[in-house]
Image (cartoon, rainbow, N blue to C red; front, side, top):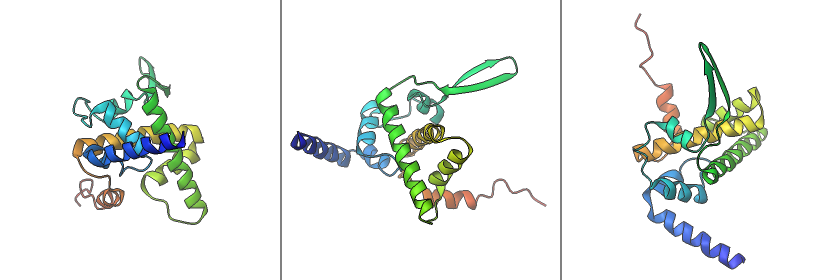
Length: 171
């Protein structure tokens, strides 16, 4: 049985190395070999038929259900519509990122970017809500990497965000 598992892992690894889309997805934190290959298999590595990242995330059932009437808007639990297997993989990846961030923070290391955001969400709510929110964010990041055909570079993204000049008002 273990020999069969090792054989499947080698085959997945070879498939991921030959697929540019898998290579892109593997640069995202929380996205491993299984998640990358499953996502590429489900989408063919092409996300152009999705209107935006929210629709892509909604395809996995990771966006909140909306109950609205008149002027009131209520966002409930995640919809759980869509691919259960990919949603489960993204959720497990999010749990892994959240746990690693918590361990790093406990060890006194600096936590930045997506990991910091996830820890902040967990501080405001609870672990399971933070996991679902992070899984949603990871799906949106996957959409952006597949759309732009660029590796996810969190440091460059944070640097660009800090140096943004578009919101500076003239005196």
